[in-house]
Length: 436
Ligand code: GDP
Ligand code: GDP
Image 1 (tube, rainbow, N blue to C red):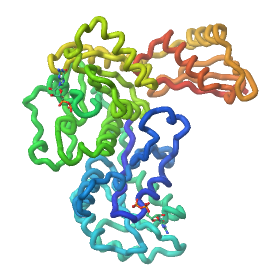
Image 2 (image 1 turned 45 degrees about the vertical axis):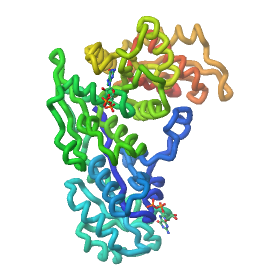
Image 3 (image 1 turned 180 degrees about the vertical axis):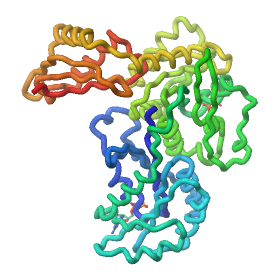
Image 4 (image 1 turned 90 degrees about the horizontal axis):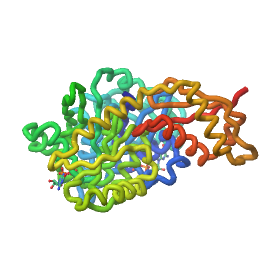
């Protein structure tokens, strides 16, 4: 289980949320450029501080049209309280403490999660005696920062990490955690219903506003599984789910909690950008993934269509070539068992260990049939390699010069490894080191 902590920034407009967000996220533009959806203006990002990786959310990016401030800020705070492990409440020192800040503070009192108060635009150096003013809201001692100058941001990051639960160490049991993701109407809640039964209706569906995630446990063939956030899947909330950015965020946080991602699409209609954007999230988070092509009952001439449909899916999800595709009908409950077979295959692939001697034979043969092209002023030569201990299958190769590795040659090597050893459904990592 590899779950990252999640930090959300809340605060009224103009306090500097997106400035702080941008200072903290680690840009990864180069590798994700050709993946649809992931380079758009986004409200979440990956960050790292003192070797701890976490996800950071700028709730200010979730906007609702024609909503009064009080309503908008309430939704932002609720989203933070639901999705995040740590909440940063940002204020603006140039304005001091405002009534609107007090409104937000009152909402945040309700959460059991750690809230860190940070006061932004504190651009001057010196003692932060000004901090006392902000203690009156009762959320603890604030950290004075300047997002644009970087002052105090390190202290804030220290505090975030300190408050973040050690999630990586927390989850150690024999359950396989699965996230079912996909755009609205592909059949996610139908699948959940056919797996856990209709009777488990979720209370918050009636209450409407509580956003507590509810997981469902089930057992299939003696193996234990957890479906993450089944409440979120079934809830057809009017306000939240219609905010596209929020639905992506929700997908991301669900993916983050999962061992294996089930990406559902509707096989009876064409694939859209929203499908591939959601798939891109799972890819980016480097999660094992299975594509569930649902509503297969609606497709006529199945024998003839299956290969065509597979090609179509592969063409749209170019970056998910390693994912298995399973055609099911959640409605008729047909082929549902295949999902669990595929999940077990993925688990087996995650634990597969390749013998070094066999791996090196494959490396040698790969270089014989297709020697590396000249790149960056030299030709790559791989001397030897081996699989190393890691959560995802990871191979280290010792080479004459890592800068000679061309992207397409790396992909060729990955394909050769997959051809020989499978690893269906799981991302694999290839690392190149210079042999001294
Ligand atoms: P948001 O609406 O809360 O996301 O706020 P923004 O990040 O968009 O910032 C609003 C304005 O405040 C922008 O003009 C920023 O350049 C400015 N700003 C943000 N952080 C600081 C800061 O630390 N010091 C100063 N002086 N200005 C800042
Ligand atoms: P969600 O928004 O992804 O949770 O989708 P739902 O489970 O609510 O399904 C949306 C619609 O598709 C509903 O009318 C379902 O009855 C229908 N549906 C779901 N799965 C199937 C399926 O396998 N076959 C057919 N024909 N319809 C389905």
